[in-house]
Amino acid sequence: MSDLLTPYTQVLGLRKAKHLLRRATFNYSKSNIDAISLMTATDALSFLTSNEDYLISEPFDYQNDGFWTSSSELPNSFSTQDKKRAYVCAWWWYNAVNQFTIKYKLSYFLFTSFTVANNSNAGASTYFFDYLKLLDFYALGNFKALAKKITLDNAMLEYLNNTDNHANNPNENYAREFLELFTILKGPQIGIDNYTNYNELDVQQAARVLTGFRKLNDRSIIEEDTNLPKGYNDISKHDSLNKVFSDAFNNNEIIGQETEEGMNQELHDFVDMIFDKEETARAYCRKLYRFFVKSEWDDEVESEIIEPLSQQLISDNYDILPTVNTLLSSKHFFDQADDLDNDEIVGAIVKSPLQLVNEVITFFQIPIPNPNTNAEEYYGKFFRKFLHNSYFASSGMNFFNPETVAGFPAHYQEPDFDRHWFTSSTIIARYKLIESLVTGKNKIFPNANIFTQIDIVAFVTENIQNPSNINDLVTELANYLFPEFINQDRVQYFADIVLEDYEDYYWTGAWNMYINDGDDVIVRTRLNSLITSMVNSAEFQLM
Image (cartoon, rainbow, N blue to C red; front, side, top):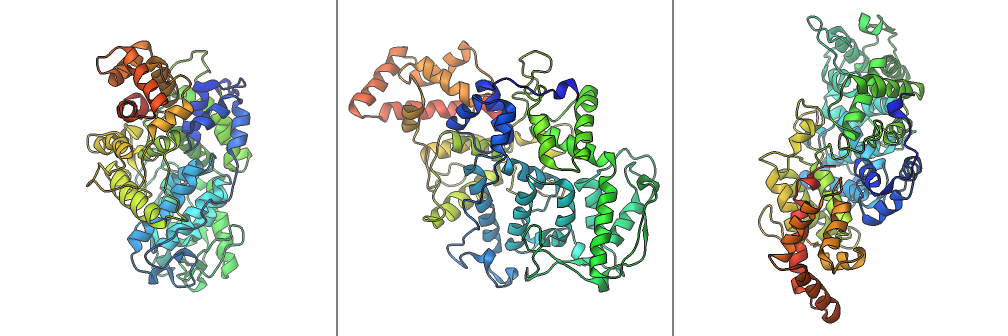
């Protein structure tokens, strides 16, 4: 194993616990940080790989159709599909933000690797629900198995048109994206229609393998491994002749089949052929590194991290967790490989809008409306109108709905990568997020009730050790909120926001008045200003 991938074996402490939780989870509470800070990386990752049941098993449309995703009616027979798509996102988000696990971070990573956009191009909202459940199922599972199963996912069949891929009328869309985006990826173009890792002949032959896999509208076929609905094999539309691939795949020949089971065998042979290429493992490991560590790296990282991780992924037959655990427990990940505790990796990624809102809500213990008892407030008001239609839409991250199958530019587009999240067109929504949560009103779009609000006085009372001392208060908040500890000048900067030209004793007196008399008007106003400034600071935008 490379020296850079040597495990970091010491107890994590606060700084490294923050780093791990930001990169590996969507639940960033103070109690979780404190618990993980007492563990080693190996123990922490073992703890984070829990695979608990969903807290809410399916979305609910409180206005029409109730639990429509489990209905026996045809999915596309339901009205208000755009609204229902938002409710599917609300279902996934609620589980992700309320469970302390790496599962949903990896599920979202799989979304960036096998993208289906949550819009009408993927069919009815129910199909997208099945797709997200498939990603959740394989988040702690296996890349190769997912590559096979997702080919028959109804949303994917519709989204990339493979349901229309017939022997006498081939559609190469899914085959092309499967190679270019989902698995081996393009290498350098070395000739006409030749992308090193594959060429146009391989796209054509792949499309022939994939003929006859079709969307099943009624979801009546259940896949035996995942227990999820899938499409069906239409042998009458399948190209049963042999398929011969280029020298990029060693001129491999897949024998054509004339039965439905034979179609599955062709699919398995095709996927195995791609995953037998080491470049496929490298492609996934580069994606994992960019997602979990940082967007750019040098030749040393390529040879000392990407390459050995790729070999591990191959030796584990593309099981995801062992490779992820190796990366996230390494000295390199914790910025310790060179014995310098610096900022090369910690704080090197701009938070996505999803990460940003999840951290604010979980850290400050902001109460989310209960979807079981307050469905309208949760699904309709808080999530759909505020988070989905206002915050995510204005922050450059239409939730689960990128403009192209390549995904959000932050995940793939050079040279800016994650810096795409922070632009002149998205910054307002990021800054108005905390203002909305402080006031309980939607400050991104018209001033509607969002049905939640930070109780910052209660949070500070219950979580900060010495809140009457302004320097201790700011320091403790900063120690948890920011990737790195801040110096005294920054502490004073944030303290001055509270003090407003008064001396330190002004805050001590205001806090003691609240403790003694219960009058929290002054401390609430000052604390709201403080956390607004801290959340909107440059430090908090990074992880």
